[in-house]
Length: 193
Image 1 (cartoon, rainbow, N blue to C red):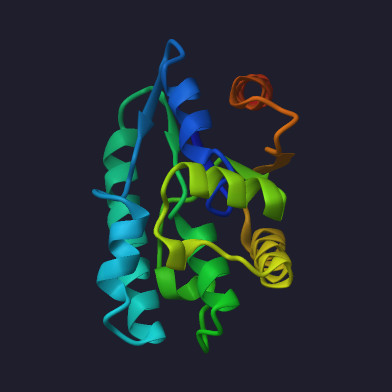
Image 2 (cartoon, rainbow, N blue to C red):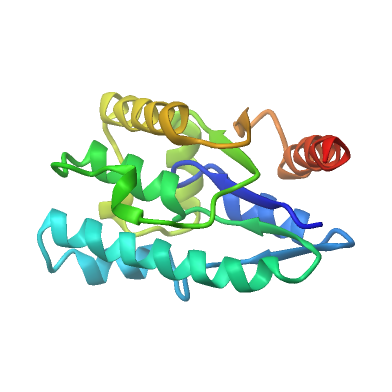
């Protein structure tokens, strides 16, 4: 039996770090479904209009789904990072892309467990600056950041399937503690099957 766990949320939520920890756990496999960084894709896509940029990311999600289909054939648990469908849909709706809908992705492999990591604006800024993220990817305005968080909430509540976990990945909780919480929930999910 295999389970697909999607870890999603805004930049600075520690998605990659949490997924790395889970991926190093016996029986798990951590895969990055986007062949290069989200930032590189954003820079490539910026030369196009917002709708074209959105469709670029939709194509990446479709490609990621095909990779997941192949991986799912192996009897292991998989962790998927951001830039899967929740981020693509939430971010582009937040950017005002007209007609950004779940149907745009077509028949993609869906998650068994969706972990929605949240983080405060202040903590996100601190983490992103420490990591030297490109400045145009950092949301300086706290109200715009709240709007993005609402876009994630809306998309996830509307379209998520399976178990949904919402975890605040703020400064008060370590990536290790978040990973432990996810692993316990996934174990319960596996026992249900």
